[in-house]
Each structure stands twice: as C-alpha cells, then as structure tokens.
Length: 77
Image (cartoon, rainbow, N blue to C red; front, top):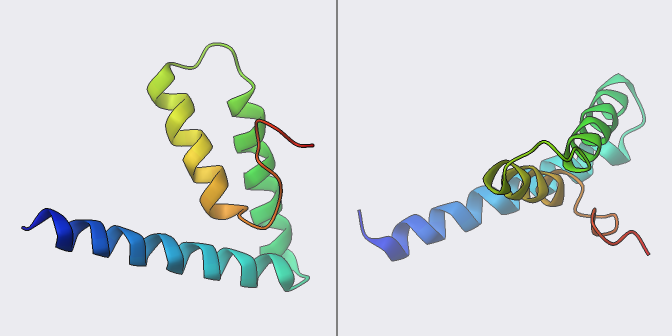
C-alpha cells in the first residue's frame, strides 16, 4: 500500500478517536468515568520509571489521542 494512503488513513483514525473520546468525556455518565479512569491509569503508567522508551512513546501518544482537550501529559502547566 502506498505510504501516502497509509498516512492518510492513520490521520483519519486519529481524528475519529479524538472526536469519539471528546464526545464520551463531554457526556457525563459511566462511559465518561471509565474513560477518565483509563486516561488516569495511562498517566500513572507514563510516570512509571520502569517503562522502555518505546512503551513510554506509545503511552504518551495514546494519552494525547484520548485526552486531546487537556494539557500535555508531560507538561501540565
């Protein structure tokens, strides 16, 4: 598959995940609470010193996708 097509598909998937995540977080309810809890678990995992560089990068990008409306997980201020 052409790299441009793959990159375009990944961008579309990222946009969809961000949109769905923002909608879930905006909707007060059990799904919102679950998503917030999962994001907090990922933030805790990011601060874990036992992670490899690759694991840390994956966790960081996952947080950025799921919690795109909040601050950078590494620089909360």
